[in-house]
Amino acid sequence: MSETGQIQIIAFYEFKKLETVAPLEDLKASFRAIFYDLGIRGTIILAGEGYNGMVCGDRETVAKFIQQTESLLQTILVYKSSFHEHPPFRKIDVKIKPEIVTLKQEVNISLGEGTHVRPTDWNAIISDPETLLLDTRNDYEYKSGTFRGALNPRTEKFSELPAFVAENLDPAKHKRIAMFCTGGIRCEKFAPYMKQIGFEEVYQLDGGILKYLEETPVEETLWEGECFVFDERITVDASLNKGSGTDHSQRFSNRKKASV
Image (cartoon, rainbow, N blue to C red; front, side, top):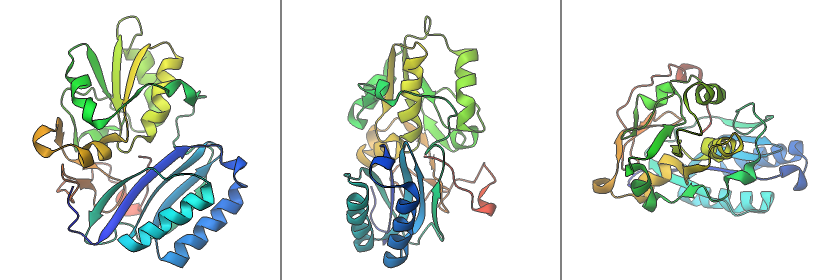
């Protein structure tokens, strides 16, 4: 991973019952205060089920943000990190939503236990010919790059993925499924969903593509192309530097954000 840029970008999430920590409106106000006090930019989504965020700042400021966030949420922040010469976020946005990643399905997250695969073990899992490799991202993300041999569901939004599975995959036929997404959060919900509907052997890439690229030497990667990211960089390459990809989603003129 290159650290030539002066701006650090971190992506993070956790499924955690936030209302046991504090009311969501109070957490929203506290995060806005942290953003303004530190000069951090980015987005945080809060819901009863947890939090999801991407923020940027100089390294010292990001370190302070991590410390204050851990104190506020009573947690240890697990995050993916990359660097860029300029801040890829311009605004401060703290939202309260029904879900931190929108699937529109009731999911028992605890069923995801035992499905996580570390980046160091991922190549072996997806190289097995018995493994069906599922890209849980949307079609415009797939077009920028994906893992070799991955199935593209051609969805426009994450909540369409259950219908694709119902129409195209069968627990009796597809015995081993491995899945991945940008930062891990979609799989954190979809892996237990797949277990819930009868798929027995399910794996998810822990930390997503970003963590895989962060930890995997370029000469060993099975990633092909660039990774679409939800900020003004549009894509990052295998070294997590700003890529040359185009925005297939055609949505960034409106500064819209999506889940990672």
